[in-house]
Image (cartoon, rainbow, N blue to C red; front, side, top):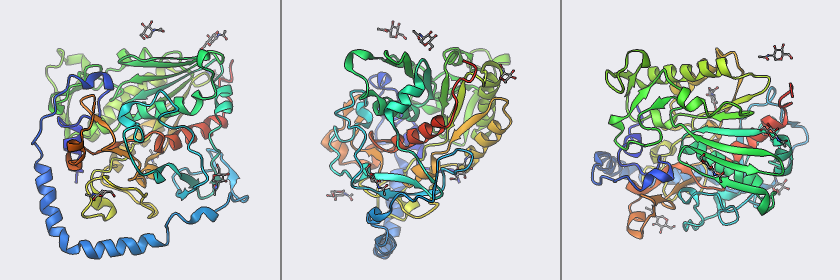
Length: 436
Ligand SMILES: *[C@@H]1O[C@H](CO)[C@@H](O)[C@H](O)[C@H]1NC(C)=O
Ligand SMILES: *[C@@H]1O[C@H](CO)[C@@H](O)[C@H](O)[C@H]1NC(C)=O
Ligand SMILES: *[C@@H]1O[C@H](CO)[C@@H](O)[C@H](O)[C@H]1NC(C)=O
Ligand SMILES: *[C@@H]1O[C@H](CO)[C@@H](O)[C@H](O)[C@H]1NC(C)=O
Ligand SMILES: *[C@@H]1O[C@H](CO)[C@@H](O)[C@H](O)[C@H]1NC(C)=O
Ligand SMILES: *[C@@H]1O[C@H](CO)[C@@H](O)[C@H](O)[C@H]1NC(C)=O
């Protein structure tokens, strides 16, 4: 079944999927939440079972309290090699001696949307978890080594607001290495560029939430039912990707607004007229193939390295982790430790589409498979420590987490730092630009 709770949060009531520049113009339509009514009914029914489940939860989690600090780096585990190591199989280990790599006060590039500490998030445990692979040692992100690797290069992240989070995380991870006068940031609606002058390197973000073109790109249409995808058109966006040395793409959550999505083909489209409603999996496949064809015809794999970040899990249904009286990810302060935990916000069929499209490409695309590791991190979202309509949530709004808690985006610092640790591990293993 389609994960119902996604509707209100990617739909007209969602303030969270917008680039900050577009936030001012949006209006939240309140009171259209039949689901919250449903949720109340469900929680009422579930109430009888609550005490029991809570006991069970306490029991199952007891042995996995943040106590695995005695885990030491296992010398038997090999150093990370993308061909030998699976990034999916691992566990989160609490490490109180870990020093978070930056804070949302020391890094000036963290958007208010995800600056949880600055926004008043009181708990801090979520900053101390490390993703430990079963078989391999994932190298720690070394900013100096990363910058050296990027010398003379353009690294570009392309995608939606989650990708923007990964980009900000990446910039924050390296920027403290660079003196003030040697770096600059230029943000605009579609393209944002961080420049490390001494390294002649840029770390860029290009906004294209579907990768392909739609009528809701630069000017986001809040009413999802009015969004129309141009499933066979990508060049308006793709022209900006030319010349990048490393491209990191994502697209997922914007497709998850219902069972079907309005689509047009350029060949017989008259603007946005004549759309067809396609099943989301079908539309996703066509859209990704359009993207893949462009990559295959325009990217020289000897010069450019291509990555794809898999879906970022949403945590809108606390029953997914047996917290029947929870409100989405609100108030969650610990990861779900159960191995292989998977929630209703991650659509495996969408994942299969990605896998099958990429498998058939000429240009090799490395998957940053972040879904499983992020799926555990119900504690990592910005929740009520965020903004709506370009304004910090008021106390009254914070008291209404069912409506306002953002369980899609991630606090920074936080989970996206681990995504970049993976990216770093992949890049470290590569001879970049062999031809140059
Ligand atoms: C915990 O973090 C510290 C500091 O980064 C590190 O030296 C240590 O190896 C980590 N412990 C584990 C178990 O990874
Ligand atoms: C800086 O990098 C660009 C490629 O991003 C390259 O074309 C240019 O020659 C480099 N400039 C210097 C001074 O190295
Ligand atoms: C910032 O980017 C915009 C658009 O990409 C460009 O027109 C402008 O010249 C840039 N400003 C600086 C200071 O580089
Ligand atoms: C990439 O490099 C290989 C080996 O150097 C060469 O045979 C091939 O033609 C190159 N491909 C392109 C598209 O330049
Ligand atoms: C959320 O956590 C706060 C602080 O621990 C607590 O006061 C509040 O009752 C919790 N709210 C819910 C709905 O669980
Ligand atoms: C990513 O990993 C999950 C398991 O964690 C797996 O089910 C999925 O197929 C992988 N995705 C791709 C695109 O390979």
